[in-house]
Length: 332
Image 1 (cartoon, helix red, strand yellow):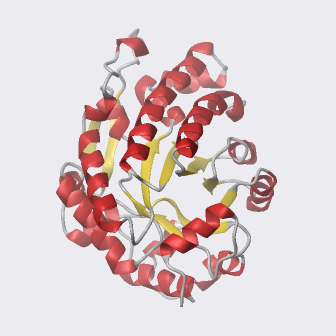
Image 2 (image 1 turned 90 degrees about the vertical axis):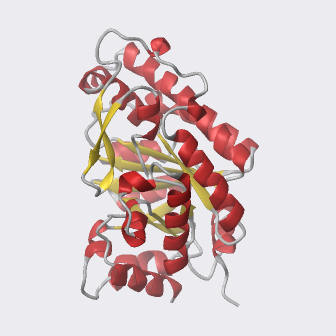
């Protein structure tokens, strides 16, 4: 009998061999397209969100069900202005409350779980756990402390980070405390995986470890206390960032951008971290055959701590036939 999604993901995090690697695409906006609803409508209603995500999973049968993919969620709850993007993607952050002289402690951070659209995602997560958890691992996404700090501070944060300004480092510690609260909230709900999403591609970071090690350690300690696994997904710009991320203590990493995959994979192995082979956006968007070569590496390495994921959020414009084709190849 073929192994189910729960067995595949459990084996991954236990370092056990499986008949194939689990496939964990980060699906959100694509689910809205399949459900024929606006992204804004989906991300503003727990019933629509949970139903769309559940139906998308039912259609394709991938191995992890993510509760949302909206990097603006926490930022909006902390006072950032957002702009919805013509129904194609989640909103983008356009206003930064710490851009002036406002300090982090001036923000309303108490009860973050009840602010903005976070209660919508929490309610949707509860419904997914109730209806889908026995079938597939439920993952909860949290925007990482570095990305959240950038949302709050704006362009000035990038400059401060490059010069290793103490103010920038302190802000990452502060945003890490927000991530920690959400991690605990999701773990108490009963999710199986915490996904931390960091977009570093436009940041010059002299020492990623010195910036992220402390806040992420606290987050991962909490997830492990609840026996919840962690995946750190990152958009990165160079080998140095890739190597550093593989030292930060997540159970698994999923990276995209300009870096040497072999070197990063070796560093992950040295640190007992499971590594993702990312399926590029072009594989989801293409209308012709030819995805085989894109995932053969991971298929052959199903017993060596590798899994498959998307680079970032699965594109809303994903071709349905391409997704079916990828699933067919993954299942062998």
